[in-house]
Image 1 (cartoon, rainbow, N blue to C red):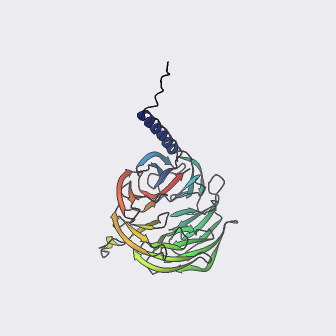
Image 2 (cartoon, helix red, strand yellow):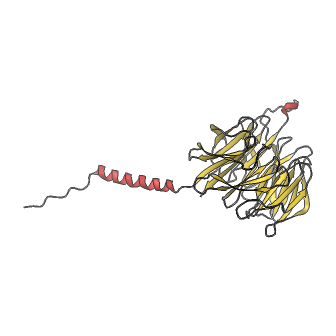
Image 3 (tube, rainbow, N blue to C red):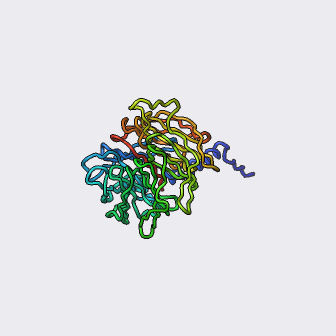
Length: 378
């Protein structure tokens, strides 16, 4: 008697088995994928709105983190994240002036209070040096910059140096190699340069100590190109965007181009229509640059020439009302802008070929949002 032949599994069953394996693999990959979070500083509500960003650019509100020990709202809420991605710091611009530190949960991105440390004045801008050991800050009204040591838990200690500047210090940021720190003086039309010793945490004036810019231009915020060879400076009072070559050895800036953040057709003759530029950021790959302008509530995009560092204007788009702050996400695919007078945030997709912005969706935030920080975990 012959044995019955075994029937092989049907093609449909084989396909189902393969599909199940693929889906299992995909879900496993997704479970371990890095996740991106956006943090929005809200001045009038004294808190931080925390959003989780999806792969498609959608924002999911996950937390509102209030400032402990802070009663009065300040004029703005500058934010900074430590290089190890463990701590977010917020500058409080109401008395008593302080830096509020939050521990960042490495899985959920949520914030928990770590402690408060003293600041010497109302500081318009804060930044952490690349070693993660020191906090830089600039006082617009106090005409000074400062350096605070950061404790192991990311809480600021007593100021180690407080240095008088020209009028209206606005940004105080380290160079890419952490050897220099630069401070814009909006009211004195200059950028101060300091040599920085990250071992001792000491600032000393560079030689020359200042770079002058055109009168009444109001240098405000600046950003280094990721390759460290160029720096871009936004001027608040005339809307100029200036491009400089950056010499890392000496810390020298050499202007190579000057263009504008004002949209085409801007008429600045009326007293209430004067330029009022605010923020500037570059994509992580260095291909596109963006600037915000508050009088017109617009964002202007530029293409960056990789060789020369020069800018070509792509165009402007309308955005949130009075866009004091915005940022580009770490993937370089999205931009989020907040409006001080609209209490909301709009997310844009960045066209990877042209750099043009396409509006996706808007989301409510706290009151008077003015700062955005992105962070990808783990």
